[in-house]
Length: 202
Image (cartoon, rainbow, N blue to C red; front, side, top):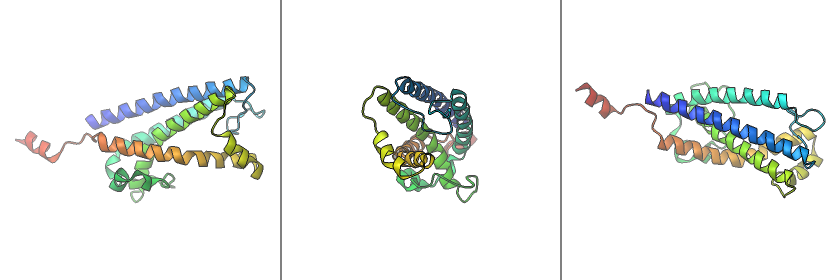
């Protein structure tokens, strides 16, 4: 029961943080657009004139939240199958973030850890995006624009955007793997130990 309650708290904290960071991303994006310093480069939420389609932005983020929260519940319930090597050396999972069938018993030692790590990863990525948007809105040097200026002349704009996301994703993913390993190492699963079972049986 303790384990289920703990997992529920983690998911609620994740959902709250996701909504806060999504609001920060939205506000800072609109701030940059209003200041004339930015344009919306994500074609999935762009209004076609390089502005932000707010309804599409909110709908997409609601869908992502539902999917990731659901997968986080599943991952936390199966945390005992995580390969212990990832708990000792989180970077070993750096390229284990995509699985065609994450529910396969063969890949669950990797996929469960990945879906636990996705939660802090998404929050950190959104925080980074909001910070970068704020820098652009204030007409201050930001971290994304120099990389974008290198990529966009070399390829199609949509492809360049996703290559940029891929590049930015991995340092944040590295950090989120360490957060996931810290959590799993520090917070017990809530299952009683054998000794506890023996004492209760007496």
